[in-house]
Length: 433
Image 1 (cartoon, rainbow, N blue to C red):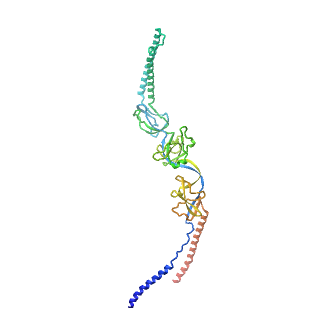
Image 2: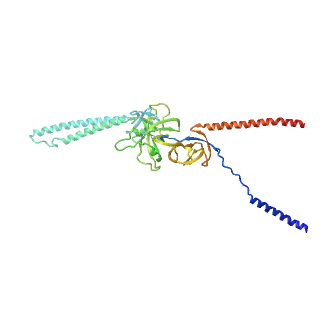
Image 3: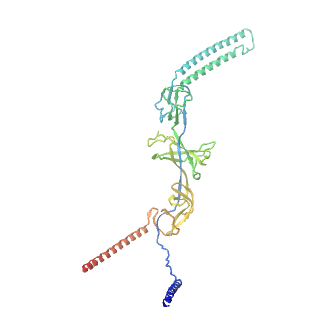
């Protein structure tokens, strides 16, 4: 009976103890010790003072080098090629009027002699007809006719026909001589051979393509412009009555990825009259004079079909705020420092290239723009300025010196304490032994 009572009382006592403990905990809950957030700087940043200044727009574009004139060289007469110029080769330069190809002219010279003979015969027939006209006029007067003789009586139609044969024979002779001249195929302009397609001994006709040639006095590059760049460009526009003035032909600097460190300078010479249907962009045409080094010998000349990048001088905008692209996040905001706190500022971009952006609104002159790359940082985070406008801040230098001295002092104190403890340990060990 006693054992049974003990078994019942023990669980009841344990349960009562837990209940009492739970009530005590509920009446006296633990209090969390929350301190104020630390005001110590959590980030070191580099900043730049925002200023308003004049900014010259430079627009980036690209294009392919095209010749001013490119045409196929064709003969005007048939014949066999008997000679070619030493400059008539792929890549060869030639001057205007230079003989590039010579054809066999013997057959054509024979045609000249035939034409000369026909001309002499026509002139003889004309002289005879003139004599007949004079004889007919005398016969009419001998018959006592006082009226003017009819044209048929005076043989005027026959005289005109004889004269026409003279003109025809003379034209045939001129044409034959011209054909002989055309056996020497001359360069129509100063240029260069793109590719040669015939050689000595080949028989050619007026439809045979001898070579592809192009002019070398200047080249042209067709450049697309983005629509956002158009308000900042001074484009060369022509009218029906006059061309664009030299003042409205912006300078263009070209560079090729194939030739590092070499640049070519040209100008915009005209603006195309319509937008490209596929890209909906406006194209301008730039011109580079003397692209093949006739006047300059430094560097490598341009090549037809070469891809080049272009930088076009645009307008100069007055008193604007510019920001490096590395300081802009997601194209819509930047960070500035106000009262040693990091603040996020939303911005509107008016124009932007690969390096900088012109800010339309969102920033003011005198604010400190953060240049240090940051991730997702909360606005209001305490920061310390490391560099301002490229100069290390003096306050941070002092803090660094103090921190360094503090660390060195701690190291010395720790070393001294260790030195004091070491002899005591040795003495204790000696006593035990």
